[in-house]
Image 1 (cartoon, helix red, strand yellow):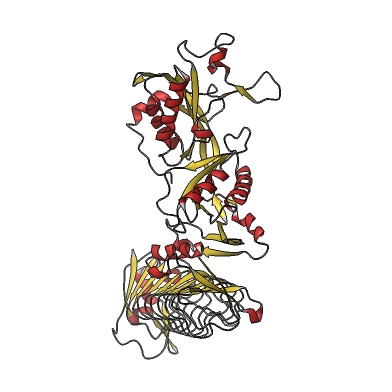
Image 2 (spheres, each protein chain N blue to C red):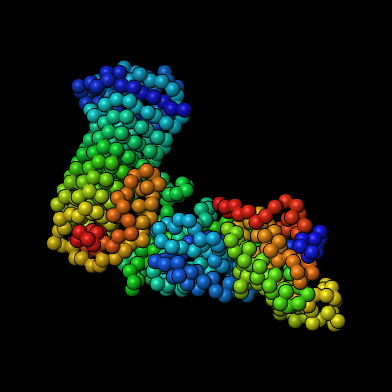
Length: 314
Length: 274
């Protein structure tokens, strides 16, 4: 199978089940909402070393709970307990500190974690809460929503008491094998641009692109992961290589999403955008199907979908 | 499916006061029509079957609709916890008293003590409400504790006394001495509030969009913009309760008090009218 002259390898990406939360960060301007969002999703590329994976989700929400400009953020972690800890620290240190920002839940779920419920103590007894009845929520919800008003120097920081948590998918991926480093990077940038407009997914790595993909294990006993030697072009002659002779650079796109369908949609859009001149083939990373629950085969993506049509994750 | 009750003597309700606590989804929903007709209702000192006062049709599982002027009917919807009750007409005192859930909609005015001791659910009165809206149950230290009350018209005196939690929104004016001893919760008044609002306020929020005569024991700070108000305004508009545009994203002066009792509640007044 080829798309725009690029070979689509007959392989699959192996992705994992994680717990995810979805936030809306608002502020008086889009600039400050983005500032808060980028700050709280910093150092969140991989659960291997960062304890969570996070990033702004595009496109921006049509409506926000307080009517101000807002940004959606997705956060993924191995468990709800870890997710709660990450949210508390990140919202507390990066959103509460951002001028005019507020933070709301955007993932209605029976399972919830405490965020505002823990941050409220920063108010030193002067905090207060407001409860919105379930009947007044849009869309209608099964439980009331509580918001904490924490007095801060520019007025009030409003944060929701609890945030919904759901099972989600992390580690959807594809590899771009380019004839030259410039060609691989240009293809990856096109892929990132096309995925950014898809809801319910994030690209947790810097600029959405991974240059140092990893494999499981290492010659060093204490390392759980090490460089992906079969895909390192400079090691082509000194180790078993998966690279054809005409490939000089490989970049990986890693996608986390609220559902397997969301990840598939993003992978399809990204691969389509990446294919073209200078891109020899598209592959994907997996562990022989032994670790991850979600196996996303590349070729069927282009038999099922005709394009990167978005659909809501809720 | 809905159970419908139509008052037989249209325009002329029974002369004696009626205790209508049986008009409640918890008691009527799911019953076949014949059993609904046999439910007792107190008229003065007598007990009569519902079928004597109402024409009954349908056998709704969760939904009851009542047609007629029930201005002399007290305790309509009392203690309801589920389902919906719609009254196309007026209701008498204590409508929705001790509600715990469900939805009670009154398309006319309501008498005194509507929502007394409310603990949940939605009470919507499209006309005016009388005095003592959302009052504490007799002998109770706390008033309304959860739930939402929406008044499409105006409300009388002594509303929201010792309110503990929940939301009251009034499209029109509010009488004197509102929210006396309020512990928490939110009262939004889009018309004008009367004298003495918030006396002995402990915590909680009163919004007086068209202004109010503030007690001298409240100290102003601000103005500020409050994002949490937009959350409530959006919620009200979601349920079809219009919010005046001038309330939206406006700066408010925050009056903190009641300082005479060490309270830290707030009365919000638009910065333009403050």
